[in-house]
Amino acid sequence: MGEYNKPLPNFNGDSKEFWAGCKKHELRFQKCEICSHVRWPASIICPICYSSETKWIAARGNGKVYSFVVYHVAYHPGFENDLPYVVADVELEEGPRLLTNIVGCRPDEVKCEMAVEVTWEDITEEFSLPKFRPYQ
Amino acid sequence: MLLERNADDAAFGHFGAVAGYALAARRAMHTFLTGPETWKSIAVGQRKWANLNPAATMYDHPMTFEDYYNARWIVEPFRLFDTCLMPDGGRAVIITSTERARDLRHPPALIMGVGQHNPSSDVHQATHLAGPTGAKKAGEMALRMAGITLEDIDACEIYDCFTYTVEITLQDYGFFRPGEGEDWLKNGTIEPGGRMPVNTSGGQLSEAYYMGLTPLSEAAMQLMGRCGKRQLGPATDTKSPEIILCSDNGGILQTHSCVLLRRS
Image (cartoon, rainbow over all chains, first blue to last red; front, side, top):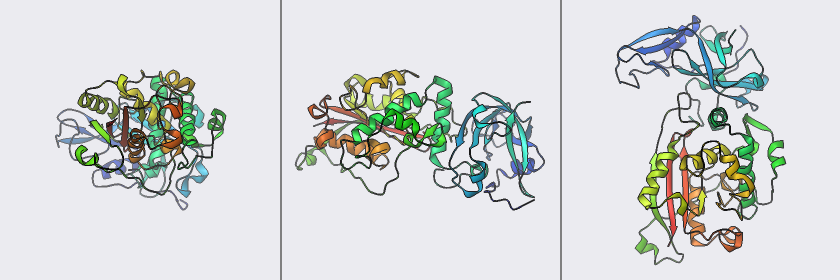
């Protein structure tokens, strides 16, 4: 794998499991054992009922675009060659919304509420990024 | 969140406030069909006020609707003139008791009401991006404290980090219903000579970005009658102001405060 020149995920103790899942091409989220709320970002207690009883579940990887933007300026040199690129907030079937990129179509083809599915980009030995493409 | 890397966002090429507010604006385009046709009237209207303000960064730079549309994209749906300026400088107001203020050289502006509401959620999970934002409850709270209604307001100084922020704030205060901003803004409503002047210094979009102090200091100055060529009243063919509404918000529409000032 060549030199990767973009910022890497800035994971912490809470989100470590999420990124370990990504490495195996699995989208993992915490599900509250008490109220069943599926949450993101990862945290030690449920933001709805404050319970700390949690299990990790695997999401199917399907969702829809809640909102999106098209970058025409590179705020980091690693993204210069990607312009224009799409950053989106994708709402997964299981509930959580994930900040990600939409790939596999032109920026002007992206719409709010468009159905999308996960596609993986293996960027380093340690990390794979969950990106999304139009549902096929 | 705004200037530093937020958790994993940078891995996906997501940086800063422009794109955060652009996500909110895009959701609003989907929810109530707003867009550049609405925002152009805010950018151009505020520029007309800046053209009357020698201290404004854009004093010597008139802008037409065509200029607005011809400007380059920054983070779509925002073009250059949807985004605020980035100046160095400062702004201050002095707050004291009415009794002490009466002994000072200038007539004071009086605080009638304040309100605050903070939806808090980060943009990724927020459900308030297309309104109601914190402006709704903060505005209601300030009006209740002041014992007035929107009908009593003569001008607004709205925190305008982006054009969309002005639209959603005025909408959530109740000046127009969702999606009716384009019509409400038509024909110079917020401009010199308009029926509801907004951001009379040029605001953060066209005067200078001093966070909440750009709107607040301008409202105070207008009520003191210290605004020269852009003074509300006969000089600009607008109502002489008795009451001005000011707003401020922080994060990506995560915090909001509203202040109502009146002439002494």
